[in-house]
Image (cartoon, rainbow, N blue to C red; front, top):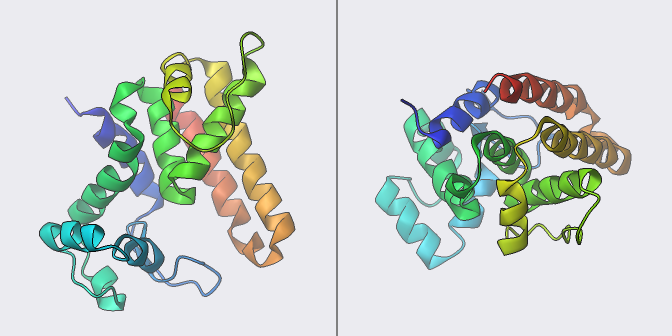
Length: 194
């Protein structure tokens, strides 16, 4: 039986396969979703460089570093930087899948903001979550209770709105809008089937 990370990553990998080198992509050269910018950010600290070297990532980060990535190494990087950082094993599968895919696509902080805003849009009792992008105790507790169709779809609605707002603010990103929206629509179908 697959663990929750594998179930989540299966969906994400279906959207993050192969190499991509679009000049409009702010992440730079990318393979299996791992971008030059992502690895460069990790390698900006000694601790990050140490872990990358233990994982077998070629440093310094160059196009060849990305080109030499395997699917397995990409999955390990995302498990470490997204899944484990957000402690997604501590919440139910469906909200974890939604948070994970958004973290890979837009970063962990933005992913948590989508979840916080979506949760707030659905829950009318108690104090709303701060939409601060921090997976703190209140947000984690809310996500443990977020395995409902209404909350999960609201989280995905927030992600869609983010993309629309991003394109409105940065028209150069419009080239990616249909792909982003198609990915969210596909994720809606995927989590409904879990």
